[in-house]
Image (cartoon, rainbow, N blue to C red; front, side, top):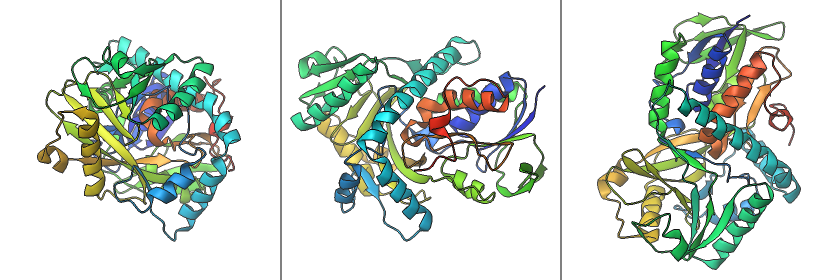
Length: 415
């Protein structure tokens, strides 16, 4: 029997949840306070990343974060502030940054990424969509032996997990990048990764969902949530009241503001990332991460995107020119002859990624309520994990056996 399901949040996670829920026969209403044309789901690097097996909360990140805190153009920045939620999150991040916890997270992250990639392939092979999707792998390009050795350790750990990874010389990389002159020593290549053009997928998915009867309430903010007998009974937006059998909170970095209304604390901090689009031919054919600079490079449909930085400084969309310029400089430094021009830099945009302290998303029902499912906290893997999360959400709401063990993703887990 289909249920009435309200999803709060219209990013990649909300849309994919709506897709799989309607496939299960549920009547879906999706609420978003924007018009769903911008944000992290539109400005990300478009990666599907089984290669990204190490969570953000890894050993050494605290030390790096402290070192980078005083550098306005550093790739990872945590703005210190007297905020109780931020301080609790920081403590949980520190506790999660142990070797044992990272080891435990590696197979979990790999499996949900592989599920995500498989579901993207299913979506692409259906006749319902026309989005760009390619599996060309991912190059981790390095200039220094130190960065190369560190990444190869990750690569070897990936091989243990069954991924196909190779350590390539500069000459061997030419096979993947024949048309650019790279200023590097070498690279580690993961052939398991794929990439996309995010705005195409978002456009296609929204169009499809509307065509199958999903209701979109855009430019409507949730202002209050009522509770009755351990159930969310009513959602009040700026325009109306909504009653639903099940509620899904998939509002990214804004999710904790919503769950707080229900007395549920979900530790999430917004991690700002920037992107520069170059809408002209660059010759770049294979997605790459410029290791020392922590910049992602993606050849998309009609453009090349350069994206980077993780700036944990609260919810705001202020653009820091020093960080944008650092991304442009990194691109020119690794790709000889590539010059990102001033108008391209000036049109940079940003999005807020919802970061959990341990690098694992929250997917599941909180014990506090019978009809509330949380789906947030995906950090830099939101795009990669969109369909996998949507599928899991639909299985939870439909009371089916889930495709993956949900214990590692439990919203009530302790740190």
